[in-house]
Length: 240
Image (cartoon, helix red, strand yellow):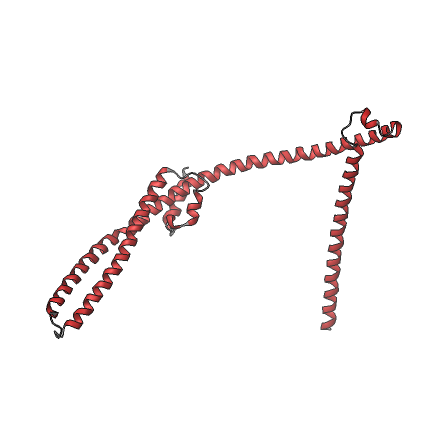
């Protein structure tokens, strides 16, 4: 891939990449093409890190709430009026210390976790971008090939339609002559499956319909133009 790979590397490094496993559009890519095993492995690792981050955030909030509760209770118990207040204060202080230790441990884990998530997320995006690049370029080549084939078929189809119509007209003219000479039994004489004149009449009817439709469209356009001109003239008269 060469230069293209370098461009993708720079693009991935310079952009704010959303977490791919949380992006529905990223998941939709894999409904159209097969997901490579290395991306599946990295996706699993990324999701585990995200779950870990979510768990730490949730537990940190719960611990902070508990710590605040313990501190509020200590403030209330400081006057010593309640029996056993000293023991309760000591227990709360011990719990607060445990909360601080857990929060400190979580803060340590959270210090590197976002970086780990970002690194694996960018790796997945890099691999995804390279794969998409390859697939799109293969598709472009196939699209060009198919477009060329379709263009050729259209030309061939048009030629065959004209040729078919010419032969139908030819059969119609010859049938008309033979019908005049031999009458209706000409169909049996020539072992014909249908009356060629029917084809000519149907073809003529189609052409008449197309002509009428074009004339109607032309008339509608002219009417719209005339209406617009008349409206504009009325507006001018009002302003004079």
